[in-house]
Length: 395
Image (cartoon, rainbow, N blue to C red; front, side):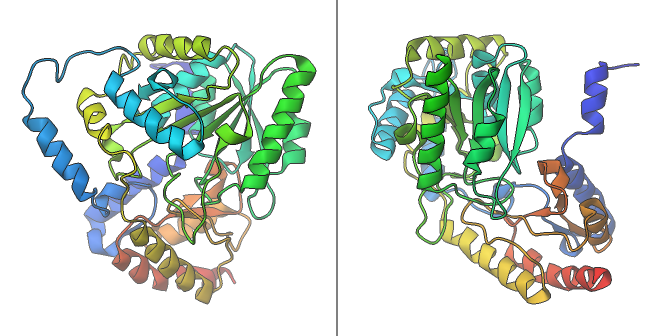
């Protein structure tokens, strides 16, 4: 044995997303890029340009060769960056945040690990609505937590009664992701309000806070006039984890933040714990260059119309073929039903036609599969023949 038993187990069940992405690299070498239709990974900068303003600020920042540009800073991040974010969030969420409520992180994944490290004692439970981002289970295990999966309704909306039934004396966190990966579902305002009411009631009953954490890297990628409701308005003990990976199309830069609701009783202790966790997890601080850039990028996002058009091309094409799905309200994923119960078999059949998708069981919901449509239009259009052939095969 060369690695820890737990890591061997994790390798065996590791993310289907990365498996299919790596398979795509192999197939492209064999068949050529234009003959492989890779919908496996939400990697927007392959096809979606960063905003022009980002390029301008990047060049200006890179030309600054003064001292301290690349130095360590407080573990929470640059004061000016956190202040800019706090001012933006205060307006967005109608809450009074200062730089003290914000911690810069290495992407949303880093933010979630810092939050979980800070809040969880061994054996504490984290409730997750299904389907969910596949890495959550590993993040929770990192810090001794126990995931508790709760099904959503048929349209992927929150089942508040099911969440209520799942709460125990060990429940510490409810973790939601809206717009959702893999479904593109946006949890509506009434659902978030009802969730806040439930958590307030349960926290009061046991005199111990349950935290609501919203993973929101897709918050600004929404369509058809939909808006993502604020968890800060719905529930005091709430925390936002997010990144600029999708809104600025810079996933490889690993820059994000945590924002703590000022209404959390003793929020200073939570923030201080997060600062310590940032250091002891080995992140130390978020990348200095990116911090300086995003300080000047508040409210700047990629052109959402690109994603809406791709969504509509994909949905129109698959609907004509006969696929069943809930049209996504945000993000850049579609989560159709597999025409057979075995989603792995179905995804394998697509793969034989050089179409790379991800089986739904990787997100906790077998019988479905995920399509990441942050790809060029030709990939979507040229894949339709293969999607039709596989559907006909299983009909």
